[in-house]
Length: 177
Image 1 (cartoon, one colour):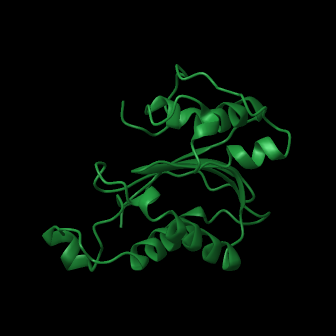
Image 2 (tube, rainbow, N blue to C red; image 1 turned 60 degrees about the horizontal axis):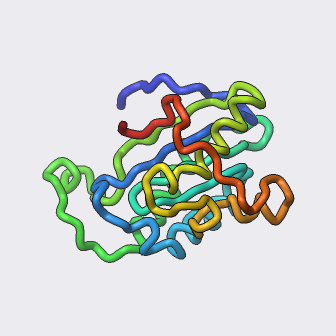
């Protein structure tokens, strides 16, 4: 197995981008309950704090903080992806490589992660999560997108309901340009 260069900081905070294999599908929002269940079940055995989360039709962005002494975000993503895939009917076309490995054709094999460096980096990535549905022209206001922890943060008083973000944000956030 390849040795990916990943930052493993116990108790660290990371930003993630996780993509469907077929970026033209809408499985994540079509089966949002299954995704939520996969995340909740995984959190029962492998806890983590969800600092921000946004689910789009074909990919998602998340910011997690792991417990002190724990840096194993890869197991958590493997379990979430596996549980979500098992909840869906087997309808996808599979490549010979995926058949040989016993894999489903739901997710891209890997994910993109970025270790959050400081409070400015954290704020920038949270805002990126929340503005992402605007960036992809799925809504005209951040508050219109239902699959986002933005609504939780509004209720907590962290963001005003009419917050719109900046859809012209720059930076490498793990998405194709």
